[in-house]
Structures are given as structure tokens and as C-alpha cells.
Image (cartoon, rainbow over all chains, first blue to last red; front, top):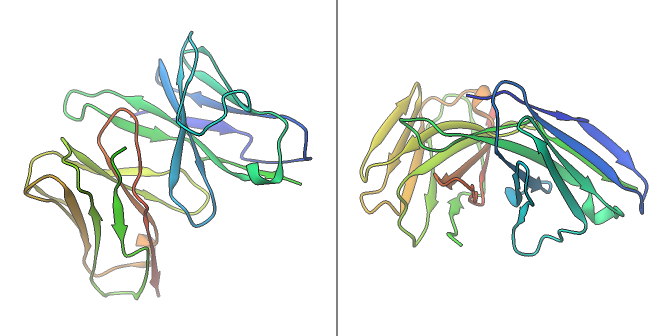
Length: 118
Length: 108
């Protein structure tokens, strides 16, 4: 498996400011990480695929200029919410994909970051 | 997009009861995964089913993959408060597109 951490676990920011969320793979070198967003009482929605050393791939409807993703090393991906607005308040979760012989795809998730924009 | 509908959306039952939740789609999947998410945490993988008709057991949890590999069910026997959480299904792809989820509450 993989142990994934996120920082911060929660953050409050003012409308119009930017906030950076870190996702670290502590024991696995991840060429790919994923970012999800989850609104209250809802399921997780995939936002983007973070690729080490190259540009992120965004899902349809996700603004790449608003949600900046940087994957500069095999253990760290960051998500920056730029010019945050109250509607960006959500639970942001990252994951690492571990390929195994028996189960080709297993994802291990971070504990999430709760963002509140006031 | 492979849309996965989960039912029921919400379920609240007494400790000790049995329950079944469902994950349905019109698409065929090579594999399907179930995750459980507890409040304020990330999801945790419970099981991956691969073969049509496959049944996997994880203690009191029984997972079944439909014969046509379009749907799956999760049956919990003698539910306990520790089973409380959001249950999510997703195709076992590199990119996960989760189902709508079932939020389960077990009342002590």
C-alpha cells in the first residue's frame, strides 16, 4: 500500500485569496496522484490527475487556471485554489495509485483538507 | 463517463440488523471496487471484484459482482456502529469515478 498525508487538514481563508494544499506520498514514489473534491453529503468528484514532471490533466468542467496543480517530485503534489470564493469551500482529497500484480489499481487516499472560504 | 448509481442514498438501521446496498450501471466493467469513507477522512478500499458472479467476504461484509459485470451489491450481517460511513463503489480503473454513494448509519 501507500501512506498519504495532506497538509493542512483544515484551512480558512478570505474570499479572493489563494490557498495551497499539499499531498505527500510518504512511502511510495508516485508518478501519478489524483485530486478529488467532496461537497457535504455528496460523493467524491475527480478534479484532476497530477503527473510528475508534466502538466496536470483536468476533468471536464474543472478550471485549470483556478485549481493549479504542481507535481514537482515523486512524493509531493500541490493544489492551489486561486482567488478562492465561498463556493470553493469543500473537502479536498488526494490519492496515490499503487499498481500491484494481483490488483492492478489500488488507490490510497489522504485524510483530506477541509477548505472554508469566508 | 461510466455512471454508477448507488441505492439507497441513505440508510439508518439498528445495531444487529442485516442490510444490503447496491451499485448499478448500464455499463460493463472489467472490475469494480468498494470503498468506505468515515467522516473527515479519505476513503479506504474494502475489496475489488473482477469476475462476473464473484463473491468476496470480508468478515461480516459480503460483496457480489453481477454475472454481467454491470452491478454489485454489498451485504452486511449483524451491523455494528463501526460500520457507519459512506460506502462508495467505483470501476477499478486508474482514474476513479465514484458512484453516488450510500450513507449508512448504524444506531447503537
